[in-house]
Amino acid sequence: MSLAHKLVLWPILMAQAVGTRKRAPALSEAAGPREGSLGQGPAGLRVLIAGDSSAAGVGVAHQDHAFAGHFTRTLHRRSGRPLRWRLRARSGLTTQEVADMLQAEPPPAADVAIVLSGVNDVIELVTPRRAVAQREAMVTWLLGTGAARYVVFAALPPINQFPLLPQPLRRVMGDDARRHDDALARWAATRAGVFHVPVDLQLSPAAMAADGFHPGEPVYRACGETLARFVAERILPTETKR
Image 1: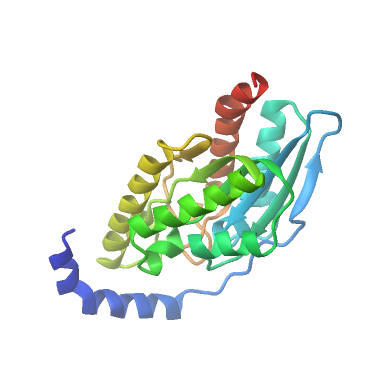
Image 2: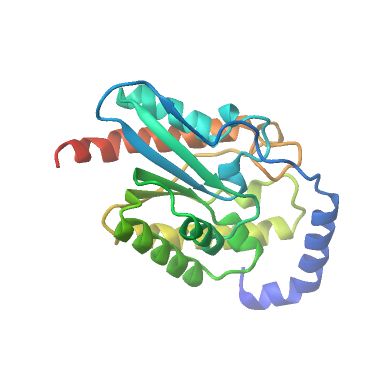
């Protein structure tokens, strides 16, 4: 959609955005531990999961059913290695705010950092270029300080499939999310130790949380298992050769 078309639709988009916020039920972050371990023995993996509501597990009751639970169990099973994980996440954060949160209270060193953010960048009208610059600064800090050896960014979800959003707001936000994700993928391909991982999602109402905006367990499972397979198959074999 062109900028001129968006400007014409702006009053409608703003009215729809305000109405959507008002009618969306407020969901809590998932309960349960935000750090833990799986397995015992040497050569354990250290994992940091950071991000917004999608990392915090909004939409499900417990972290076992959220991204962290599905990701860590799958990675432990596929790698065959002990795993120590930590979750740093809060609902509503933009990419910049995720970086600020991590730097305000630096986490212990990790082998792999998984970052889930971007939807709030779209909501807050952060430009793709600015969001990439903020991710660049985050990665520079994570890798430069030894907070992580590899950084994996989950792809932005297909916002054009969010059941909560009315048209044309759904289409406009979906187009913006695709531009953000395309920019993220292009940038990640230029950075050593940084990865962008797409996830094949079909966001039917049954797969989403009760609010029609946040993930339900089927989405968290798909995302967690996809990113875990990527780490186990694409990153760990390289790591063992170092």
